Length: 447
Image (cartoon, rainbow, N blue to C red; front, top):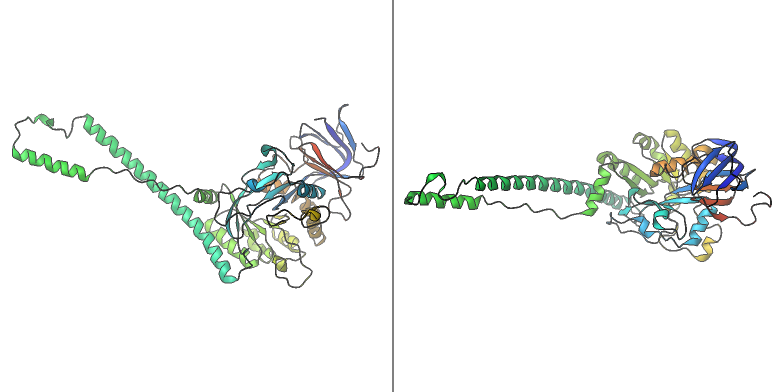
């Protein structure tokens, strides 16, 4: 691909830093230069970004863009990457218009364990190795999502989740017991083979000739009976349980436990579970989590806010616990806060008219962050929560999330600051390819 240079723009690096009148160079899908005095080659395509803002592509931490089905409540081994529709170009384009280039898609379920979440790059019709940035991010589950259950149902679901983890530990103990029994069995086999090779226990061994008496024959028969009693039996191997093995990866710290919950009581139950099992927890949705901010901070549990506050005093859905200043309150307590679009389509493609403009099919991620900033959340922290900090949470910080040489050229050109009223996306690049260009947004002579 031809090298590209975006010059004379305001760069929001993705880690809280801002660079006035800077430039970004990228070639072959990667950023090659960032700074105030970058030099573009003669053959590079030059884009004058005066008055514009350039950011890394936004990361939707907990979305459902082009997710085509909901996972069963006892799957554990399912993967959200398998449910992503690479050909859902309308939905992907709607995400580009909001500046989103990457989405973390949890393996969504009504309740129980749904499977493993994945990090997806929004490259339409891209090859799997281009689209799936990270196939395994966290083991995903849901609590209290089936018809907004009451306290008894919630307690039962939490106990079911706890039982699954304890069953996984029992599975590991059975595997370890089998390994010990198998080792003992093999050692005894080797010992008997050694005795047989040395001639011990064979007829005639020890110089006893054919003229043995009746007493000696009785002794041999008794020895034969004892040998049958001591006959070795190979231990039976326990049946493989791949779901239990996936849960063990959470207990071992290899994967996070990512749970969607929308009620303070559910959040409290999850914190109890995380403390009991000593697992790394992420709570998505987290409506009402600000009521437990100190405990979340103490256990170092990040939250992904997805529900927007409702204008009504009370509603039947998760929004009834959301307040405008929840992100700011959580942040003041020391909780890591991220933003996600949540369940957009419910596992089915949205209606055609929904993706053509402002709709529930679009992530509206910058708007969510702007609302949080308007209610006291720091604007730089909000932007980092959708770029550099989000990449670290998902384990892809060496690939995306910042304007830095060596990282992937996933970036967005905005008409103004992304959190400012009226700011819109003018260009989107993913892996150095220009995938979106707003019609009529770029004056003549600026390229």
